[in-house]
Length: 243
Image (cartoon, rainbow, N blue to C red; front, side, top):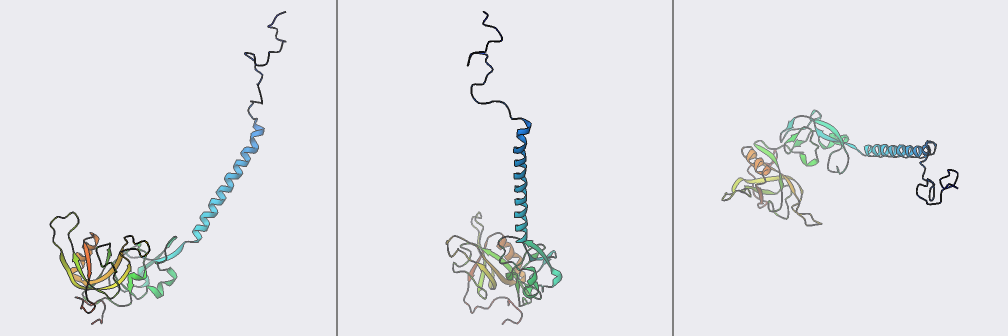
């Protein structure tokens, strides 16, 4: 008897046996793969629909706000409708002026500082009073050590001082404006809750001759404001008709 007879079944586990040891190793047929692919397609469609719905919802939260339409607006300029544009934003925009409120909050008011095309505006950018002749409103951002820790408020009188830059050894401080009036203020030197350093933003009215130097010192972070007694008379009146 020949042990190589093709009719004799191979022993389980013998070398060369093609029989599976346990379970089926065959690949699924095309017919079996179709339901899985269909389910995956449905999931992708649902995810796409959910994403589109989320985008639509977020778009619905966007609001139009007042922005500047012209190239630039100088301090003291009387605002009109032609100076304004609108743009939509989402997120933390509480300080901005909604476009449907431009008539009562912007129209006919005077710019307190320079404004530029595309800039969104707040109430601090405008005043009801016209800046007096010879005066220019300058916006200043101050960090810790650049203003009194108690802060500044509208109506305060300050002295404008330029100090040497941090990397300028042997520099000398100079007084740019002996007395200037604060016409707007927001923020604080330090956060009331966390006590962390913050930024104080103020607008001061300075003589036109010192406006460029003051603005340059503010931009280079070499400007310091010191508070003067309330009875001090400013070099230039902040508004027409002021004493």
